[in-house]
Image (tube, rainbow, N blue to C red; front, top):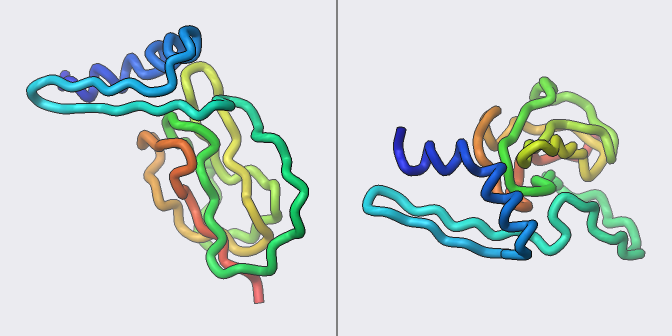
Length: 132
């Protein structure tokens, strides 16, 4: 196995230890590769809601990852109609399986990340195209 493959296999344990010791950033490297991890302040928690006016219908609304981890498809295909809040995929972060939810009503675009790929916090996983 390569350095990166070993790290990815140990990622859930590493993230758990980082959270336990309140470490927010770590960089690891050797002669063949490097990896930098940064955890969000509210890792694994829903950020607090801020009262704002609903946005006007926007073109190609992004659907971000809720956490860093491994992306898992929900099996929804491109051009699938979605409603805001509908689960369109998951991100596995250690033992957690966090839902990825649609951020607007519309039509789901293609997955921008392959099933089983590592994603970062707030990486864009899909785009939603407005209907009409």
